Amino acid sequence: MEIIIPTQCEICHAPMNKIPAGISKKTGKPYNEFYACSVRDCGWTWKKPTQQQLEGEKRHEEVMDALRKLWVAVEEMKKEFKSFTVIFGKNEEPKGKV
Image (cartoon, rainbow, N blue to C red; front, top):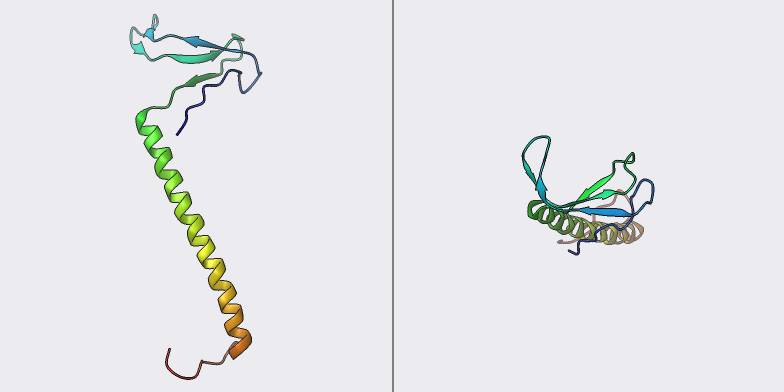
């Protein structure tokens, strides 16, 4: 998965500033680099996703692909069922072994 770093704020469309990793003056805790809107009052920020978030996104894509394949299979079954009901009627059982 490719990570696309935003060049513009999603709210006000101003350019983004890269804030390097450092130590918070307020809390004294370290923080990773992030991107912040250049308009101070806007407040929109973007952080690079963690490895855990990336893995979750990959798993989500895998599940969505499986669901799409299932949907296609169900649609095909619906077509076959319509053909079946046209041949045998809705309430008839097919004759012979299945």
